Figure 1: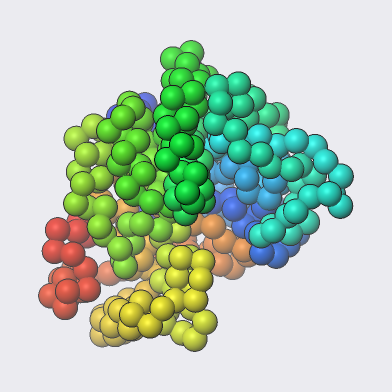
Figure 2 (figure 1 turned 30 degrees about the horizontal axis):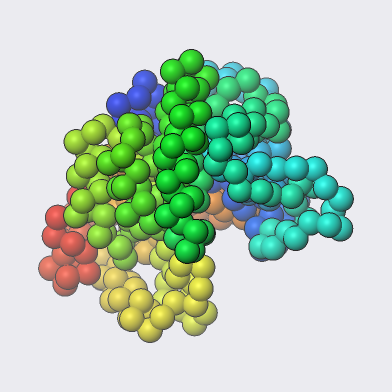
Length: 338
């Protein structure tokens, strides 16, 4: 599949490109990206035919939305799909008073979790202001998972399914947004949300990859049954599926444990036997599932972005996937390209 291929977004009247541009890095996560590089990546993605862009108030305390809107401001609004998120409200503050970690030199706002009806509406409107755009196509409820909220998660999730849901349903009914969903790090949370509410879509970070396919058991089949789209972010498991099993490789935002290093090493051997770059396999595997229209990749440089685009369309022989399954490195029921 080519990165600029247009794919139906579940049951919604939208089409997204199979490759999506993820904007967390241009929010200056971990280290700063200058304005020229940020805008250069957005324009490179556009020139490559990429028409799906995902952002969030969290990314750089508003900086990602500001930069995304700046990069797209002169484009025909009907020519691209934009998603952002609710669940945090930003409030102006002096830079010296803001705890930015893990962001660097970010927007001059403090972040506050707010899944109330009013907080959701304010977050939505504030995002449009920062984006300097008149509309948002897709809106996700952000970070109602245990990874982010810990022991508070059950109460936070309950509120989000009530008041935050009510606000987003109203916005969808009014035509202010075309699709509403949940964006988290755990497929189990997405699964529970879909059982409780009529969501159109999900953004799942790192839980359906070459290394992890547990969501095939319950969540992805339910999405297929209900017509819900799933966008995958973090498809490199936060690093190791891009870098390979090297010393210091990251898995789930931390150093990869020995068993993950070993498994990736075995996948790399199959890659070497078939002359397939590991990142190409990781990218292309994800979008082979029928409910997954797009893989969102975040990059730090134009060169990284261009590599991802090339990997997305790198030829991969069918027997590569067969061998992964034969060696029990990929679930037998996992859909594969071709």
